[in-house]
Length: 142
Image 1 (cartoon, rainbow, N blue to C red):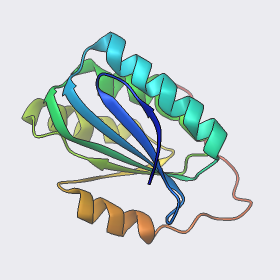
Image 2 (tube, rainbow, N blue to C red):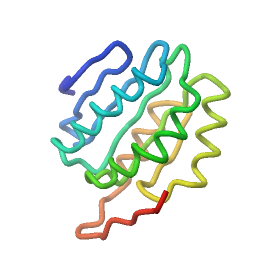
Image 3 (tube, rainbow, N blue to C red):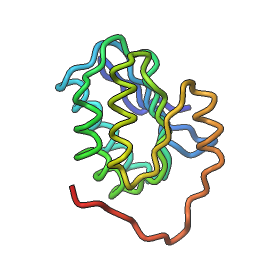
Image 4 (spheres, rainbow, N blue to C red):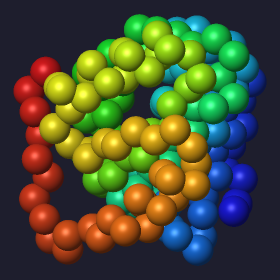
């Protein structure tokens, strides 16, 4: 994997073999660092034009609980517009973060987001997702 960017709470890599972005979040998150990381992910999504993202939250020591709701409203639609179709979300070990993510799934139309307890399961699922060539982008009004 190629390292594309790194911040105080996020490492973004591109997996050349699988042709997807890998985001590994770590440490204590707050609004500022989470939004900075999401902006970087959006920048690299636009540059790489991949349809898949592996979002690994296992190493988060303190989540920003509102971040998942904010991401569903603002960040995911922008990522979908930039070509993202499949999001493999690896849960944070924090129960509150898991509950917020599961509840937010009801509102997410696109990309297709599925949550996992470990990275291996997420990788297997992403490998099995085949992007539809020429498929129209579905969007939801927020």
